[in-house]
Length: 330
Image 1: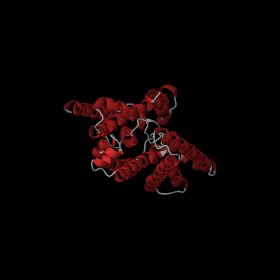
Image 2: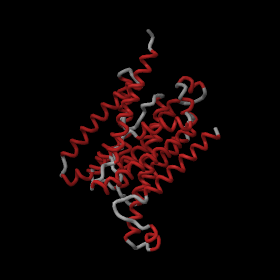
Image 3: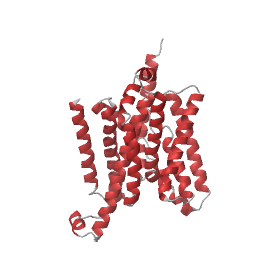
Image 4: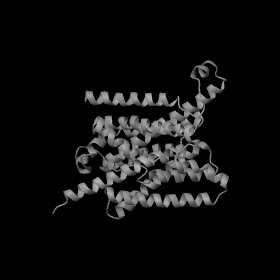
């Protein structure tokens, strides 16, 4: 236990080092000495904007990875991911509706939260109606949910002017931008509330790993835990998607490696997933900013995570199918 705790601390330190290094990468040159010496200088303005961007990427990556770890525990399969299950898409649809309706910035995360909850409910109802609540049923329902969400998003964007449609483009692409500190702080508060709620459920999630019947026999109220995980996860995903947009597969990839590093105890796995996810997205965003200095354009960070996560997802899906085929009676 002590060794795994040490690994968790190392992951936290690594995430902070990655964030500190990311502050020094960007298209515009920056002198931190001048920024600290003269708060009214151009360097100070760049430093403020870049710090907000790195903080946003840190919070977003950590939050998405933590939700992925919670989903994987709840559904007892390694393919639990807010993007693959359609929760991120529902949040994106809610946020897009709020933006196109001209809602205040503070109401956009709330609309995304409602959209995420509705998407999660729709996926569960669809999977149970088909009689397949396992990994295959949930993934199939998530695929259908994502298809409907993407169609709805495209339809909504076609109904408004190009200027209004551009306001929602970042939600679809998954991009980390230089947001004002007030907005970064709002997202961080929402994400922190949901993340702390998930961390407080670490012990019930450990018991659920042995199956709902075993957990119930040990005193866990399984429906309450499921509701709490769904609600907290939807809040976290909504907060992130409302500003950063759709960033795929962070919640899928990161918990797999965090589990190998600190074990399956969710008291360590959840914070480890947060630190590892924060590190991954900060590095991905730093790479996107570095590409701007080389090729003159900055790819959305969601494209980078999709390029990495897509093949990993297909590999994991194939391994899951192979393992079930091998264990089937002959």
